[in-house]
Image (spheres, one colour):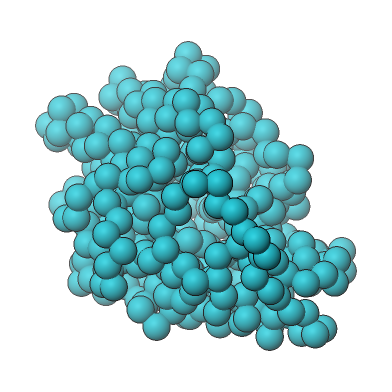
Length: 355
C-alpha cells in the first residue's frame, strides 16, 4: 500500500504533532514528496525532531489560522493528496481557551478546504476528526457514522463543526470536480513519542521514567484505545482508495475491536505489567474535575470500515502497549529512535490486511 505514495505530492497539516510525526515517517519511507504545515512543536514534545524526518520533508512552520500564509505554502506545494491533522486536540485545554480551539479546529478547516477549492491539483482530501464528534449518550454500544454530530465540550464540538464544514464544502464545491473528500473519526491513540499533558499513557511514561507511582484521574472511563499506527494506516488507505475511485469517499470510524475497549484503569494496569520494575498506580485522591465534563463511556462501531475495505486491527491493546513501552525504553536508553520507528512501522505493515 505504501508503494502508491512513491512520488506523490502530499500536503500534511499538523505534521509536527504526535500523529503527524509518525505519519511523516511513514510517508518518507514510502517515497512521497511531503509538505508539512504546522506550529512549532511544544518544548516538551520531541518526537518530530527525534524521528529524523525534519530534514527529509518540506517542513513549514505556520499557523493554520493564517489564511494568507497557508494559501501561499499550499499553492507552491501543488499537492495531489491533502491530510488535515492540525488541531487543538486536548479536551481540558479547550475549556481553558475555547475561542482558540474553535479558531483552530473550525476556521482552520475552512481555510484549508478553501485552498483545495481554489486549486486545480488536488484529487484526494482527508479531514481527521475524532470519535468525540458524536452526541454522547453514554451508550454501551458503539457509535455509527450516521449518528448525530454534537460534541459536548469545546474540543469535541469544534470537531463536530469541522465535520459539518467538510460536508458543506464537499456538497457545495467538490461534487462536480474530481476531488474526493472523506473524514476519519478515530479513537484515543497511544504509542511511542506522545509527550502531551493530560493523556494517560504519557502520564504513565513520565511517572515510570521517574520511578514514581502513576496517578490516574478517572480510572473508570472507557475509551477506544489503539496504537497510533492503526488509524494512520487507515488514513493513508482511504486517501489512496478515493484517489483511485471517488466512490470510496465518505465518513469512517476508526477504532479497536470491542475486546480492546478498556477502562483507563485497565489500560494503566496493563502498562505497569508491560513496563515492569514494580511500577504501580493509584487513583488521584480528592480529584476535583472543576465541573469540566468528560465522557465516561465511548466506543465506535467500525463495521463500515471493515465491510468496505476488509479492514481489521493489526495490534490489540496489549501489543499496542508493548510497542509503546518498547519505544519509551529505547528513548530512555538514548537509543536510535528513527530505527525503532522504522522497525515498528515495517512490522505493523507486514501483519496488515490492507495492501
